Image 1 (cartoon, one colour):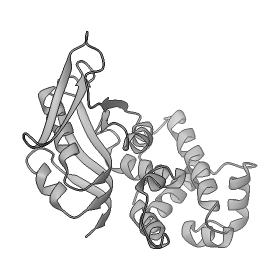
Image 2 (cartoon, rainbow, N blue to C red):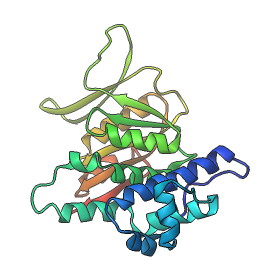
Image 3 (cartoon, rainbow, N blue to C red):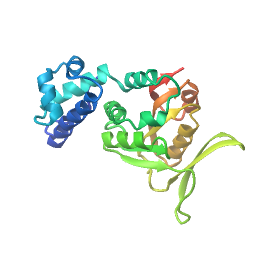
Image 4 (spheres, rainbow, N blue to C red):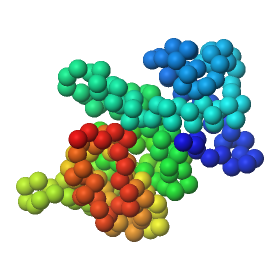
Length: 243
């Protein structure tokens, strides 16, 4: 799996990639030894020690190799699976979505697929906000939040709804102007069961005249959510699917 592309001559992009590799190694070091990181990245542990301590920064090529090997050998789904298997009981998805390493791997995973393809990230309040924020930062995209109520009575809103009226309907609102005609939008949520929240978000995007690029979730339970989005979103991807 390739790291997010950096245009030739993009010094800022090269620096970002080098610092991302250092940040990633520091997060990984909390859970794995230098010997294990050497096996994961293929980089000698002496060099890894310098990178983790901050005394040296990898070259652009070395940073790209580190990010690519980590994404290949330790994708978000594997890390999430290990966390869930180690929980021995009920899993608090909020703890998972607030894990800095999970957020960093998820943002790199999404950047690999959608950098240059999506200029905005849309999420519903409040559970998916940390994940959506990390992905928006990784993409260099604007973050738009859909809320359950019209908070400002003097502002217009775009409504999106999903469910079976009149009893089980989810309704979300995004401020008018936050999404423009022609915007390419990535939908993000932390957990998908029925897909109702993502369906409502997709309808907001479509009603704004924007284009939903994909729906991305951290954990998906079953496949109903994906069927629900058929015809609304070109692709629906989960970093970890259960059941």
